[in-house]
Image (cartoon, rainbow, N blue to C red; front, side, top):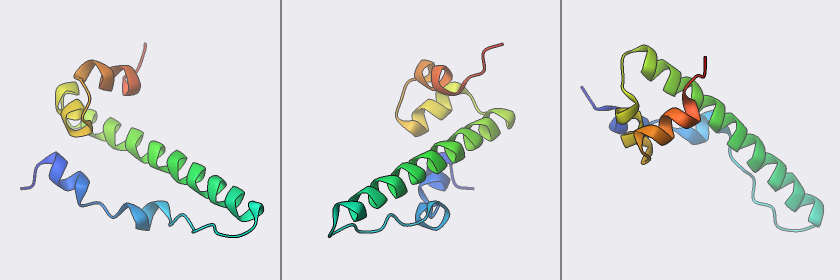
Length: 84
């Protein structure tokens, strides 16, 4: 069974986030590219938050999640943990 990091790196993000179009040409084209990239970031953040919640629900620790994300367990908790 592949580990968590292996599974995350195998997710085809382009398929789920959409492709950010190349934006040569008029300034309006560049702004459309900025808008598309911002939307891709928002969707990626939503997906990341959901997968972190699922990982926690399945018993993964903040240390494991932080390791996969390349941050400390405290940073992972501060970003994704719930405050009651």
